[in-house]
Image 1 (tube, helix red, strand yellow):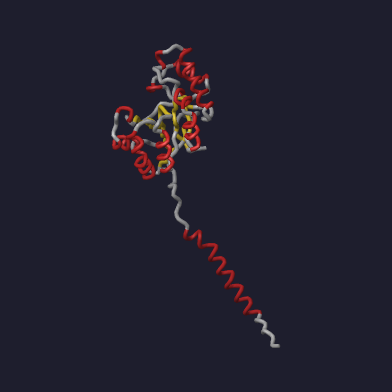
Image 2: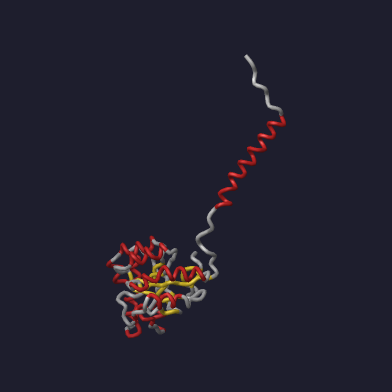
Length: 232
């Protein structure tokens, strides 16, 4: 029976070198051909805020926000949070932040301190009971506030948040006008939008595109500064 000739040391070394080179190339290939990151670098952050939810439009709104890579602060009314706890949980599951927008949306500056306290405290409880956590941000209805409203909110651990840009969606603004309003946002600023607006829902993809084109990302709102910052 014949014997298989043994390869020389030089041949073995050559074969090992070839194998090592091929392995290195295979390991490097995924990195070299990997697709670029979908998320552009964030040169600043803006706060997208949606008042008056949750509503019959909330599910579609959350789907649009998630599909376009956006997160937002949802300023919920207590009465709607109490009536639709599953939608509050859906907001949280979609990565949104929950804020307090009073219980029945009254003109708080026309109420007594006790009435203001009831509006705010009942909303804190309703949102917590619905699974939305304990809000740290408060938006007074109509943006109307005074020293009493601020002091009651502060007593509940809430920071009052108004806005820098009003989309006017509550006033029948067109989708185009809402997109243009969002285009005025600068780093740290906040825009007023509404959960129930069909035109706002339609504007979401273009708002996302506009922010990306300007290197801006949707951020959270800092309770310390009241401005939009990078999500923690």
